[in-house]
Image (cartoon, rainbow, N blue to C red; front, side):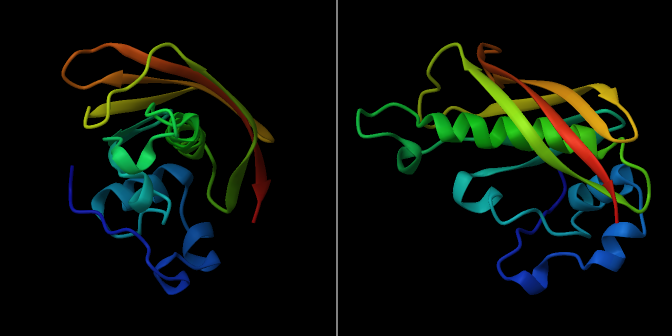
Length: 161
């Protein structure tokens, strides 16, 4: 993984001209290379982009104490946020120059709790990349133990800039 920077202010985010001047794959490769800022959500949720290819994106992250719910378990929102990112960004790799996406809906299935401090990978893979919609699936697995912690699916809407 190369050095990525996380947007701290609106000025750190790419402008629309930059966004629409490249394909979704080029955009995601720019984030991985550190030429384009990672989204602000990555900072507080403690995850970053790890790998990008056509139709596939991998994030790596580690949930921490601050991500726990009142009962001491990892909050479901952490699973959802990381899965939404990997699945939707996988769709982004299929988006043509001049277009962008937004998540229409997503579903998360938590199969076991992730212990705080456990590094995980969130892998998103496109199942359908069309002109107006993209569908992908995702999973969260432990980097060290390979255990499946959660799965998900999403549908994204693709729009012209």
